[in-house]
Image (cartoon, rainbow, N blue to C red; front, side, top):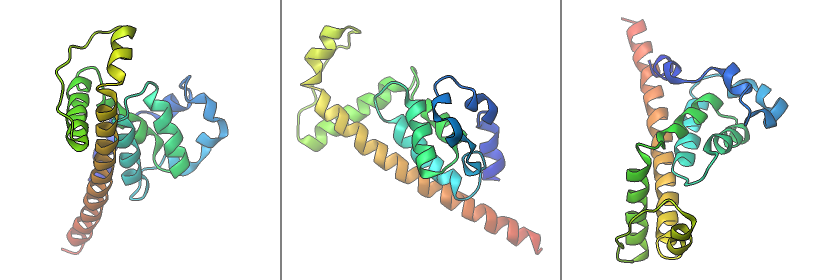
Length: 168
């Protein structure tokens, strides 16, 4: 069940192989485990994808692909999961990360008005930057671990359920 469900949302491997930002990996993209979905590659791909999704950086897909290759997990799934961070979800996710980071550092959360310019960025990096980055890294680790354990558990129980139904 999880395999068929996950496969519905995975991007096409050929599309990813030809993606302009992923071509730099060359022959590394030929590893078979990067393109198969099994009980080992899926939880790892969830961990990689969810970790990278929480990092506030451009080109998240490239980092997710590099980590998927490094850890030999399903590349399409890892790349697809970084799209959890999108223009709709990003403000809430990053605000929660900032609040968590401020709490962990013992800072009082500051009110701020976002402005899309370089001056605002430079002025804010010293005040809200450290709590924001700490919150992002902590949430990346937590969601990565939870995603890994959840998919691994779901996969295990799915297999047990199939075996149980097989002998009825």
